[in-house]
Image (cartoon, rainbow, N blue to C red; front, side):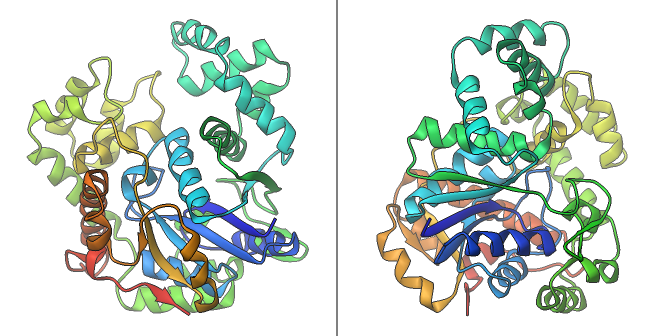
Length: 388
């Protein structure tokens, strides 16, 4: 390991993330690149703090380079999220992909990835879907039928994402070595804990609490950045997010819903009916919910419909640099994709780049509308990279 990469959201950056960066550094990495969700996040929403704050928090806490995982890929299934992040880090020149896992055993995670990529599992998954299982449950059950113990790996969130990273590495023949690391101190979505005397809490735990309650669980330099951001009105305003999202959905022609990513089995009709009647986001999700579709998928579906994210996307066509330490900038010379700090310039490199840039900018503009202090349009084009 010499040049390590991490695919992440840092929404917000906390002590667990700092511990992961430190572990990667102790493992021998001379440079650490972060591919960070930008404009949207995987849970089907926008980040609690804008990119500039999260990028700076990462850089002051141990990262060397931060590149964007553009919004269309950031707000996606674990499979799509991983399949976009892996080629970006590979194109940057990384040799290692580090990630958290409940079972940090690279051989087992790779074996699970190979199983999921094989032909035998698909008929089993379809059979279990026909029984009314969600896709995640059907896949775990099918994997367990084929190889004892594999089902358990596919029932915990970090393992699931880690296996998707391994799948992407294998499928794309990416020159990345997976480096799974344990989650220290606090489970994903669970209660707070500690590791070696350091308080630990998950990002979801922090997002559900007022800013000052974050203080024990985030590095002090990051906490100072968060306090400044809140004072400037950059924190996410949930009510504005709700109003903006419902307004976009109500303004969308019903026929457009059929073209949205993730729409199938007549779900566009269910979405159109829910949009007409819902008096809030939770009501909308409730009207959409069925046993077949978990809440996370519906949140992503709703955001995709509001932002008009299509079903088929090209592979990430560029490396948008969000921030870097000066000594890491020479690394960019070896990048195997168009690379730069200007989204406008990158969009001129090809039709795929133009398409992804437009979708990404739309999501950033939407995110800017959802802050305590509404920010202007065009930040995807005008925001300056963070250089330390």
